[in-house]
Image (cartoon, rainbow, N blue to C red):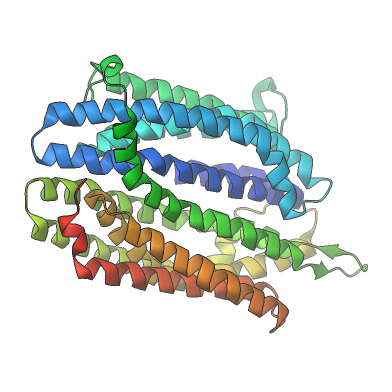
Length: 437
C-alpha cells in the first residue's frame, strides 16, 4: 500500500507545487479519518486472536462477523463525513485559490472508496487475529496495482482517457478500493483464509458486543487520531511560515516541504507497519494459551529488529534525503522554488529519520499492546508526546525563538523520542500480561 502511495504522489509531483500541496492537505484529512477504523479493528485483532489461541474457533469466527457489521456501519458514516465536511476542514490550512478546489474535489471523489477501504481493513483484521496476514496482503496488492495503473491513465490522460490530474488520482483510488473489497470479501466468503463468512447474518452485534469492541477500540482510536489531529495543526502552522520571494511575494514552501517529507517517509512505513502488525496476533494467541513470557519475548525481538532497520533508514535519509524528495517534485516550472522546498524537506527527513530510531518502539510495543487488548498505554504515549510536547514546543520555536521550518521538524523529533520511550517503559511494567478482553 505504501508503494502505491509513493507512486501516486510521484505522479502528482509532476503536476506542480499547487497540486502537491493540495493533495498534502487532503492527505492529512484522510489520515485523520482513517484513525477511526481502530474503533473496530483494534478490538477485532485482540478478541479473535485470544479465541484462536484458546482454540475457541467458533467464537472467534462469530466475533469476526460482529466486527464486520460494525465496520460496515462505520464505513458509511466516515464516507459521509469526508464528502460533506472535508471542504470545511480544508479551509483550516489556508489554501490558495488554486489549491482549494483541487483538494475539495480530491476528497469528494475519494470518499466512497474510503468507505470501501475501511470495510476491507475490517475483514483484514479478522484474518490477522487468526494469524493470517497473507490473504489480506494479496487483496491489497490487487488494490494498489490497479490503483497505480488507473493513476497513470487518469492523471495524465493516457490511452485516450481524459487528463484529470489530481481528480484522476482520487477516482483511481476509489475504483481500485471497490475492486479490492470484492476480492477480500470473496476470500472471506469462500474461506480462503482461516475464517469463513458462514453464519454472518446470525451474528449481529448487540450493545454488549459493541461495548466489548469499543473498550479496546476507543483508546486505540485516541492513539491513532492524536498524530493526524496534531498533524492538521502542524500543517496549519507550517502554512503560516511563509517564504519571501525575489519579486516581493510570499509562498508557503514549508507546507509543501512538509507534504513531500511525509511522502518520502513512506519508504520507512513499509517496515514500521509490518513491525506493528507482526506481534499483535502472536501476543494475543500466546496470552490465550496462558504463555505470557513467550508473548513478551515476541515483542522484544520485533523491537530489536525495528530499531536496527530504522537506524539504517536514518542513515539513508541523511545521505540521500534530497534525492528521495526529488521523486515527489518533478515539475520544473519553478526551479528556484523547488530548490528551496527540497532543502527544507531534506532537513525534515534528517530530523524525523533520527527520531524514528526511538519512535519505532511505540510501533512495535504498540502492536504487542494491541494483541493483548491493552490499548491505553499507546494512547497515553501519543497524547503526551503530541499535545504536551510537540505542539507547545512548535509554538515556542515559531513565536519566541523565531525559527523557520526547523521549528516544525525539531518539535516532531522531540515528540517521537518521548512517545517511543514512554510506550517502552509501560511495556516493561508488564500489566498487559494480565489484561482481560
